[in-house]
Image (cartoon, rainbow, N blue to C red):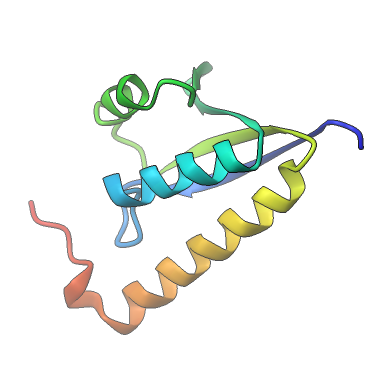
Length: 104
């Protein structure tokens, strides 16, 4: 199978935001999918191979969404999984806004 490269915008500062729990799930999916992933922020590429460092850098970002670039043989499949997870989070946020309200 050929190497694939895909990208997806991850909600970051909305009701369906990237929480620590969601970040860990994302990291696990990428590792299980045997793909390499990067967050592209303001022209910089932050590899997702060192999760604590990446989360620390992401906590300093003040954007509504961040571009996630995925490369590997299963990148397209992983893209569909992540896109589905984002859609479910958005639907949950709309149906139960009190559960997903951000403080501050």
